[in-house]
Length: 473
Image 1 (cartoon, rainbow, N blue to C red):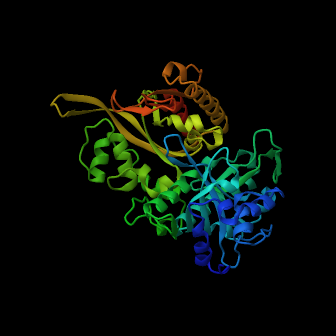
Image 2: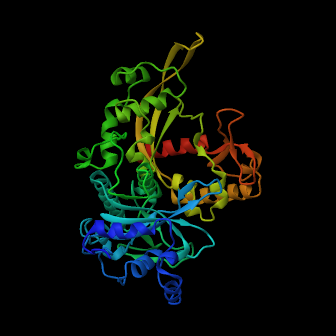
Image 3: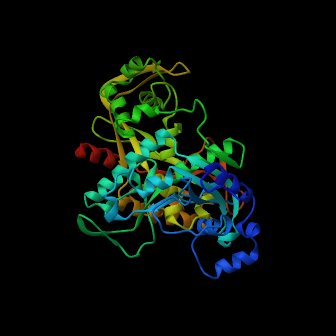
């Protein structure tokens, strides 16, 4: 048995589940008796059938004496055998009327997520829950810096509800903690305080990007069961925990950036102690250096990966025009083909996430330099104008959903080409090639190899985003 007051004992008791299903461990007869009563989800089954305690509705963690919450979370295996996080990890439903009267430390969410026993299982479409195989187990104690960021996320969500804007909540409002939709379109809406507008049901959840990093830490340990897994020593970070005690992540980041506003590219190089770069992506490189103060890719930092946050660099011409569209990652044809739920799709995760835009504007000067072949190059000079955080609107997310459904239909019908992808008349997004060379191809769900294509924001949409931000400042 296990000691219900000892987190390590509770963790060790779960380890034998790895590589097995709940049916295999507790027996088919036990499962049949439980299933006939049609109770709960997989987590509740583990609690009652494996740990032998009756779940209850009390506002406390599952193993209250140990302060441990048990959570099961699904992994999906694509046809190319890669594993991906199936969905965000739901911690607790949001009661709009109660949460407005609770501080972070008073909330049930806070009590539940501080220390969690995470059971990762392999989700398979045609299997019953008690036949899912458990793959990884972790006793996850939320790190100090994560706790500071999540506390601010919680306050952002609750403050929005206090303003009577529960119906406007978006997962893009926050970094690690999301207010995710619960239920389906057309489900009953809920009343909220401070507004007569009813809102969809939502829950506090850790975002898929955050859960992906937890899974990466487990895999990196080369074990299937890990206690208090942590990020690697020396992992690239934007801030130390102590730097976030008096300000939010976003406030601290914008404060770090502000001294460089108005500087031209050459002035930025001098201020940051780096040499002039002749590459096409020099403005993206200098934007990364502004944020980090050293070489490195911001999108690979611990904070950006856990938040699913993306830094994007924009160059604006003197007349306000933007020539370049904005690219994202290549389409994973297996993921698109296998996924039936927009809210669980990779594109929804990207587009509903948070963006940090670094804007450089042409300043009227010219830059001259010789390229590697000795040819004299002259181009416009740009100055760092500003940086701002941005989240896609609900209306644009609905447009993105329609476009994703069109892309999915094309992939499933083996119509993997721009003339099919872009036949959908969309003024916000498009698809076009993004590969290193003609030989750089991707596996097709239909067999063989096909060209790589990726999602893009239209340049007109990027211009609209930039201009809208200026108006809102």
